[in-house]
Amino acid sequence: MAHKTVILYPSLGVGHLNPMVELAKVFLRRGMAVVMAIVDSPDKDSVSAEALARLAAANPDIAFRHLPVPSRGTERCSTNPVMRAIDVLRAANPALLGFLRALPAVDALVLDMFCTDALDVAAELGVPAYIFFSSALGDLAVMLHLPYYYPTAPSSFKDTPETVLHFPGVPPIRALDMGATMQDRDSDVAKARLSQCARMLEARGILVNSFDWLEARALEALSRGLCTPGRSAPPVHCIGPLVLAGNKGGASERHACLEWLDAQPDRSVVFLSFGSLGRFSMPQLREIARGLENSGQRFLWVVRSPPEHRSNSVEPDLDLEPLLPEGFLERTRERGFAVKNWAPQSEVLRHLSIGAFVTHCGWNSALEGIASGVPMICWPLYAEQKMNKVHMVEELKVGVVMEGYEEELVKAEEVEAKVRLVMAPGSGDGEELRQRLVTAKDMAVEVLKEGGSSHVAFDAFLTDLLKNTR
Ligand code: UDP
Image (cartoon, rainbow, N blue to C red; front, side):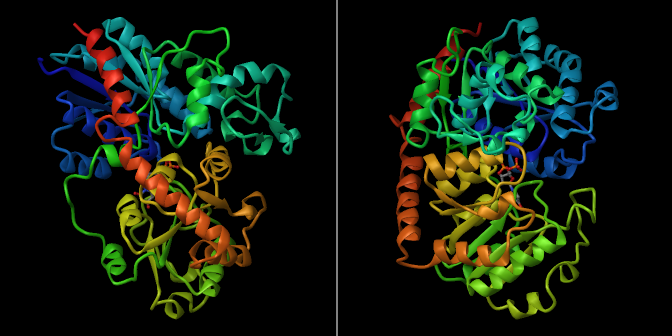
């Protein structure tokens, strides 16, 4: 078979880029050539040129290419970051088309779930297009069913936060836990997201970074067409967890926190990390610190400055001392490690010393926790994370909730109690959770082996792709 070239087109942001890089590695292993077309946006939440250069150096077999930012796209953008991303990506369509026309070969496009406008580019080029859905299968089930639900729903979920909503294949979801962009039915961003979801149905298939054992009910609902009654939908291919499928490559310099972890006993450290964008106010940082100190547990904590302090995400000179309770760093020096801004999260989670993960419930983080067999304490912050929290706690049973997320502040007492619950050996609920994670980790490995469900799903997708290329 001649090399086929697949174009991967991620949305803005680390949470979208990371799993696409893992997906690229799977394509390479299957003998395909991969070009990753990345929209070069000045948006502060986008991946920095530096981070991208690091990624490219670590993955020399993937052709990373920048598409120039269309200024038209960014000028009229709203302040809503999701709307802004959608606008920028839409405005990048001509640049994408021009770029692809200049390539010697383009056999298929794999588009991030936020890049549905690029389906027009695929049609123009006459190549098959697939969607890559980088969040939970449960979120896909909800998003595809939402147009059927909205007509009878209140115009704003914020008016009825405790109303319980029912969608096929997922546990009941309170209105307040619905995705942030979907809270107001008539908002521009909700309309834009719904129209993107409707367009996903035009693709030849939807690849999802999840696996059948983990989200069996949602997969069944989607496969039986229960989420899109009366409409034909493309097949859903559950090919994850990509964090394991892609394998790690390009060993770079080892982060100091990993050296510190090497010196800690197995399963003794609670890891706290809140995605690529999570930030807390100073009072919240102090509550966390007090909770960690009182828990008596070892911890590794990725700390960023409060949103009111800085607007850009890179802060090489971040000073933690004034942000945290006086003397905290000194008092916990023996058993705690605070990392500024960023840690190599998936590597940290795989380290044997990690016993629990306090997470903001971004889907990549959830999968990284599951693939490492680490019980989670779910503290959703933004985007679709409250919905993920529902899936993780009610359906997948891989975590407990930090209940205070609904309040202005999560109190130190709750941080302490939840950390103790999940870390304490032999505690009833904590033990059950740990056992569940042992099984989930084993399953995450199994499904990727030859004959495993994710491997088979990737085969089915590839067969379709090859059948539809020239
Ligand atoms: N991440 C990391 N170090 C950090 C914070 C995040 O490596 O300090 C990675 C994390 O491993 C994950 C991604 O960034 O792969 C975040 O994606 P996720 O879907 O969890 O959350 P998002 O950032 O999209 O909210």
